[in-house]
Amino acid sequence: FSLFISFFVSIYVVRYLGPHDYGLMSYILSFVGLFSFVAALGVDSVLLRELTKYPEKQNELFGSALFLKLAGSIIAICLIIFFLQFTNNDFYTNLLIIASSLSFIFQSFQIIFFHFQAKAISKIPTLASVLIGLILSGLKILFVILKLKVVFFLGIFILEPILYAISYIILYKMQGLSIKNWAFNRSLAVALLKDSWPLMLASAFAFVYSRIDQIMIKNMMDSTAVGLYDVGVRLSEVWYLIPAIIVSSIFPAIINAKKTDELVYQRRLARLYTLVIYISFFIILPLYFFSGLAIKILYGVQFLGAISVLKIYVWSGLAMAIGTVVNQFLLVENLTRISLYINCLGMLINILLNLILIPRIGINGAALATLISYSLIPFSILLFKKTRIHAKIILFGFMFKAPQYE
Image 1 (cartoon, rainbow, N blue to C red):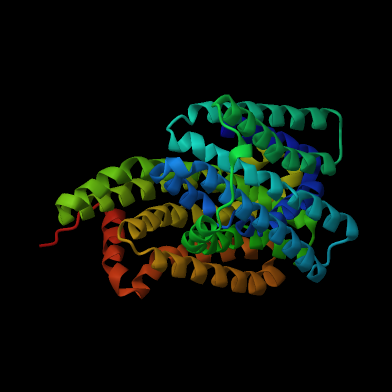
Image 2: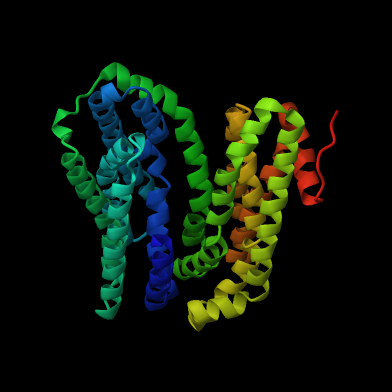
């Protein structure tokens, strides 16, 4: 519900800001997002696991995790200030980037959510999240009505983690708990960091994958180009949640099959691929053929330059859907290191192709670079002996067939 409301409010904001101002805002948020993996340090998943296993250590786990996150936030802000020296941004843009990066500090307190998740009472903070989402959406609409400048919309980006931090602290206190009882434990902090660094690297590759194109477009072209590109990307990715929901819902049954019968496991994997592949086609084809109409109705004629981006980028969704299943397969098979290699390879190819294609064909080149690098994920499993057989399962899924191994 929140995503649905947010999507249509964002369209309202984009139409108001126009390609240039919206492009500037997208660039700023992309630049800041590029360093978010440093602020997060990959701690979240490990923290949730430890809270579930050792609830009696909650105060020390939270205290140690908060220290790590605050330290990571400060390092991320310093890195942003350092790398801004190598951009062609004006002073105003750099100031907005630094101000936006302060949100990392407040995001650190969102670890409180894992208390509710570990206790299986996440309904309470989820309702708070919906309320915050509605408040922020209301503010965006109000700012459009008042005809305020882009800096106010960036202010909402900073306000969001502040509201989450305040609400989570209040909800935590209502549970009879207090953040004043949190305590830093050096050995626990080291253990958290030791377990989380591979996840941090994976997040780094993923963020670079998703953000670097907009940053390169801004530095090679201009803010207007970023705005047009982001609209094409936004429409292309609006349905990405569907394959994720399908895979997360069905995969437990696939894992159970692996425990008892390898052939049934492979057949279920093939059927899952069939499902996500052809659902992707069902969504991609209308978006491709009606791209012009969709952009004109939703964003207006000023964004018609995004049509070609949408026509190219939308096909990345097929590779993304397949990649969602591939990543789950690698996790089940305990081949997470291969997942790290694949994402690193995709990231490097994406950057290289952006450097080559953006100067030649502009924002279409960035879309093509993403399409090619995303498409390499299913094919890259052929590079590793342990995963080559999985390529056959993908092929079976595409052909509506089931594996027939002895």
